View 1 (tube, rainbow, N blue to C red):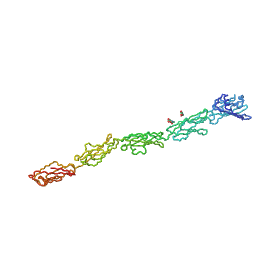
View 2 (view 1 turned 135 degrees about the vertical axis):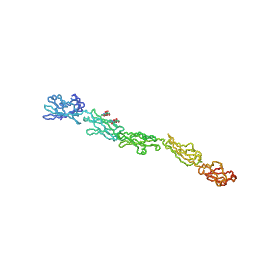
View 3 (view 1 turned 45 degrees about the vertical axis):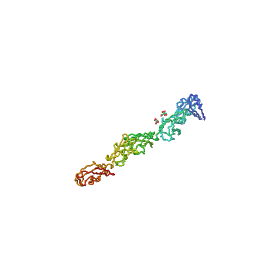
View 4 (view 1 turned 60 degrees about the horizontal axis):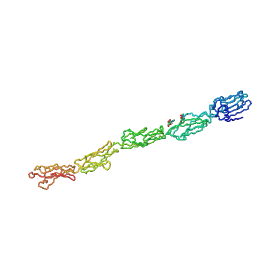
Length: 564
Ligand SMILES: *[C@@H]1O[C@H](CO)[C@@H](O)[C@H](O)[C@H]1NC(C)=O
Ligand SMILES: *[C@@H]1O[C@H](CO)[C@@H](O)[C@H](O)[C@H]1NC(C)=O
């Protein structure tokens, strides 16, 4: 058994001699076996060639390698007789060279990665010799890796923890050995690494999440996976990978302001627009869909005054806004997304109510006494008056007035909006016994509002009038021979005072006993002033006489006056 090993140079040298270009052939070896049989000489040769070499390229000189006489080849019918792929090769009967007759595609010939051989049977006759020639087809890098798909979309939730792995499609390369896919590479990026797992012959590329994704920062990532074979030069293929980041409800709604401060006129009409709260949520879909609601601890009474549109965030008036009830409202408004679970944020809406002059001043009177003596000194306090107004500012401020022509005055007290009603001068019951004092309280709003109140004052009597006789002196004519004891005259005094101050009693002023002192013959009724004569008068002895009557009232002290 002889084994022959040719080095590359030697082989290449022969190729050059035959005009074939086989520069990429890495080596060739052949050997032959000679079976020493009586009827048959048999040998086996082995060659190798790259696939895809030019038609005509020389594989080797079979005749020479078998030690055949080249000049006899034709006459001995040197030829290839069989071989599944015999048509790929042919021998030259002139020189014994085995050459390529058809394009050799290793991948077509031998599917798969294993070494690829074709067997040929070469015969010469006289004597008959059968030789077996094996040609190994060596792989050339005639295929690039390729991905089945043009683009790959991978959906990854933004909550996914770093370390998670996602299998990527591998590239196929029909070439064998080093010419098959050797390496994968991932384009530069912040979030992913590439990991290669060997699974038998195949290499499986895996995407490894390195840093958590944030959809709100970047909703998709474009990566390029490159598969490279080991040929010289290497060939490669790219696969575009799009990472779609799926939303998680990881963002709260955000209000455009923490505190919304607005003013609202009291008595604002129902449905008056007050303000609109606005919020955004970076998440998408339900996670970013916002609804508004009043915070849980808003006073139920307040909810009867304001409405909140849960979609638009508009706040409107739905009740009576009364400054005097509350001049400021603090509403907590919550924005909630519809994620599972939802996320919420609160804001504060401060509604300051502006006063409108909608309240009249109020007057409160504290009467010290409903009666005031007519002899009260000027400056006597009759009543205490306080005024107030529930409105604020100028709408509160109140001015109190009295009519001009009355003997009373208002004296401001040390306390604001408190007055004393005092007498301005001495009163006279006998002129005016009763006053209805009209108090006017007016605020300084625009327009001003007023309140009127009447205070009744009774002037009480003081015994300041003496009884008075209508005429003085009084003259009366008495007819002589009158009946003793009979009524001769009435005197009457009137008193402008009241009650006992006006109750008049009469008496006679006793004379000194002079010759015309007739008082001992006269009698007067104390209560009605009836004067009666106790004796009968005689014109001839007494023509005229005088006497005095005193009228006294019952006041304390009493007052009296005389009439003659
Ligand atoms: C990736 O995001 C951009 C905007 O950030 C968008 O225009 C584009 O359509 C997205 N691509 C895919 C595949 O979602
Ligand atoms: C792949 O991505 C590159 C740029 O990143 C782009 O030019 C090319 O058109 C993409 N190919 C496909 C098939 O989407």
